[in-house]
Image (cartoon, rainbow, N blue to C red; front, side, top):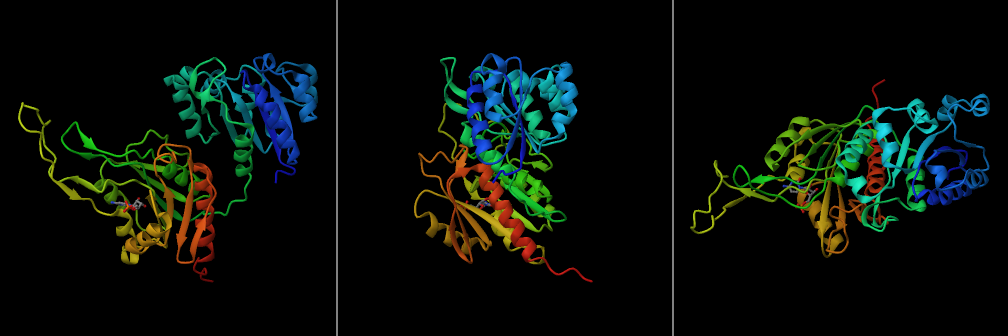
Length: 406
Ligand code: C5P
């Protein structure tokens, strides 16, 4: 699968660096050529000898080494790769990457590279949660840097939380996914909805739901990666704007509908947003007061169904309309009924019963329900679900492309 692919692996400082040795093995087993840069910090945790033995290549460590530079200049090192992987990526290297600081061989190569970069953060939970690190990672992701992890669990420092480096097999899956052949969507327009909606009760309170926007944002990113001119209409979400995607942020279902209708015509619409079913009929103009009396009675009214509205948009109807069905029981039966009720072409049905961790989690188990039947996909990262869906969309649209006039 990775035969002939060239990976430049930057190993920065962190106790998790031992996992990178395993990663090198797995990459080599799959036929990838692995060249490694070991930072000064990295060399405190793994030895150059073990990295060299496993990669079967010289290990690069010094920026100003005459021998290294004459054998392989740092520019060539950064360009003679198909993918650059930084694992573990310490808080410090992420900060220097975000700032464009080139003060050692690793950061110089990272600044000089014209190749895609994947980072695998690993650090203490407070360091990961620190606004500085979060801002740095958001900056990098906006620039198109891909990321795997970190996961949550026991950390080497004895604390428990987010910051744990992804396991070698997860990193490998992300690397393999990176090299998947992608069908181009260049010249086509895509619309994606994502996140929850906020329906105001009064100027300070609202009705919302637990959608994180992760799946919808990942779908927009995957469509854009294939070259689609992609608009993401998103409710309030902490997810960073995906690279190469035009993002319109809205709050309510009615605003989402207006933004979606305004985006037509598009070739494909994917409605991944968890749109509030109801809104308060007449939100209060001022903050509701307790005043010691009875609690206010909220009168709710139904929100517009954006998916159904796009599916019945007449001659503006996208060629492919895709919806989601979050179900807690009879997943496929309910999704099949929903597909008919909404008039969409495909429904991605997912099981969101408590315990599956789908809401806000990193993984998703979905079934693609179409006129052709049901296709069940294995449990995979939301990014992988997005990539698979985008590939299916691309193949469908290309196959159904009207013949170009000659
Ligand atoms: O009816 P239900 O909310 O289960 O349907 C889910 C699907 O419909 C999702 O694709 C969601 O984005 C879409 N939807 C919508 N507008 C609504 C409600 C749901 O677009 N008001």
